[in-house]
Every structure is written in structure tokens, then in C-alpha cells.
Length: 210
Image (cartoon, rainbow, N blue to C red; front, side, top):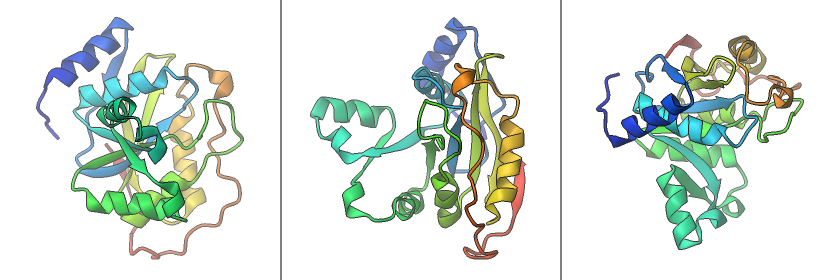
């Protein structure tokens, strides 16, 4: 998908170039998606992700606790970086809340870090998967490879409903991707969560590349 190059593109390219990085591939030809950000091992992941998105011409958004946006200056900065406030106290189901956000927007690339922490964890959180499944949007596997100094948006897929089968594909994708602190990289695993029933959201399996 060809996108117009503006100031953000050149700023992102300058940032990445200053560190010797390059962006691989192009933005996916879809208007909405849940973007996985992995591996997440450092605070440096944030500026590199924003710069990568700018070069690809993709406006990334992220969900944060609404109290982070209450301060006028901080709230403005949070929104400028793509933040969307969500009041978690008013919803018992964050997956449903985020799925509603995805449905309500015509163009929305929502970035999620499934590890949920920069420390090593023994499994991923599965919210990203069920958000995409509920909203009937694809998951796009984003990456920052500090060993190769490359970043981009890779495999695109629609969740099949078989969580463990899809996670095997995700695990294979990230197998050779190195985070800034490899020792903090979490296991690409989700434990023993049951797979969704086939056809629960009327979605057929589709895999491809962005």
C-alpha cells in the first residue's frame, strides 16, 4: 500500500539511520489490525517502534489506562504518540472494549506487547489474539531485531480459533529475532489456554505475509 511521505517519515528515517538501522518490507495492505510488538525487552523499543511506523507510513495506536491521560500536558503527549485512553473500571472485559474500538475506527493499527513486561516471562498474554478474533481483524507480527538492526511488519494472519496452532506459527516467526536484552526475552508460549470453537466469530483461517 503506497503512502504519502511526510515529516514523520523523514524524522523516523533519520532516527533509525543515526543508529544504523533499516526498515524491511512495506506496510500491510489492510486498514485495521492488531500489531504484535515483540520481543519487548527495553524502553528503547518504544522510540524504535514509533520510528519504524513513521517510515512505513502506519499510524500506530496503543491503549493505556485513562488516568495516564488526565494531566493536560501528559495527556496531550500520550495522544500525540498514539495513546487511546480506556477506563478499565467501566469494563469487565478489556478484550471486548478494545474490539469495540477496532470496529469503531475505519483505520486503526493497534499495537500490543503480549509479554506485558520488559522482564522475562514464561508465557505471553493472549489478549492480542482474542482482540483480533473478536473484531475480525488480522494480527500483524511486528519486530525489532537488535542483532541485525532491522525492524518491520512481517507475517499477517487472521486468527483461526486454534490458539496453539497459531502460536506455533508465531513462535517460528520470532525464533531468530533478537531483542535488545536477549536474556529478558519471554517464552513465545501461552500455556494451556483452550482453543476457541471453530467458527465462533465466523472467521476462516487465512495466513499470508504483509
